[in-house]
Image (cartoon, rainbow, N blue to C red; front, side, top):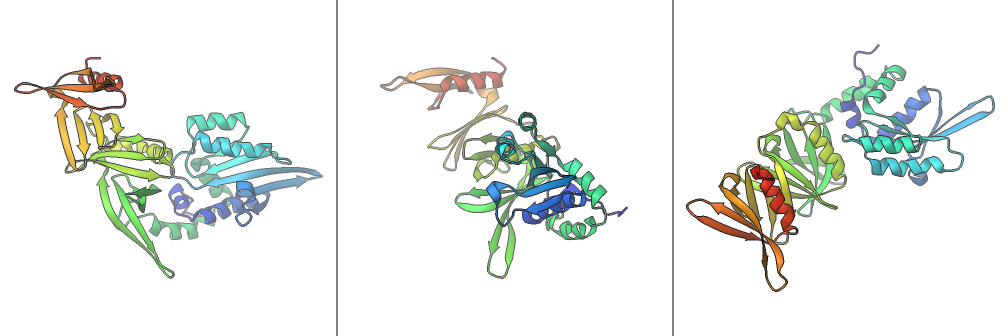
Length: 330
């Protein structure tokens, strides 16, 4: 057998269209009739496979997903609907990664066949053992940054109106900017974040907030295509860069961001950061202010004297509860 066996890292560095062709080739090697639908995009289907024996015909639809993060329930449900098309005997989802627990449950509901990264490489090594070498050579250079770090995930994102790629390694998150011209494509690493500086993530409907502290506390607001995938991908390596400070609660408001960790409370407003250490907090109360008597959060800071800090928050009760929990007074 060829010493250069198929590896998941190789597959992650193959162009998405090439990956679909590779999956189609795999099923062809397994004895199926295959038809790639890249040109027609037949209702979102990537590949059709079929087999005919003695007048018995079976047809499956295959979705090929070259992902670094787990495939979630939403996508599995979407592809599950394909199994109810006319003359379709089943749906197969092939991914370089894995499926979330909810994704697997959803797949079982629709009787989908789920092929994860380890099984995929095993199948490739069995049916296409002599074809991995060319991909091995091709992918090896792309898989390693100029820093020498191996990439395990790339995610398209937008920050401050600029489109970038978030490149994940075991030690860092890089912001990669790609400048394309008619004849060339230039990749530039414009920022590096030490993974050990990450305090936590907060996910909203359309945004992902990353709370970090390198030289100073900072909140990175990203619009990302697959926030669940990015968050889950990052969590896979969390033990390797786990720090003592963790995010307990986060809120984005018009003026800025409010952050609560197991060490401090931060009010971050346009470059200015107000910090209250948890060990200096004597208590948290709910205070009614204004004509409408809206609930506001009152934090009692104890140093030489008691200072009362008032904050306009979305849910004062939840913030008070989170603060007391952080103080061990719940």
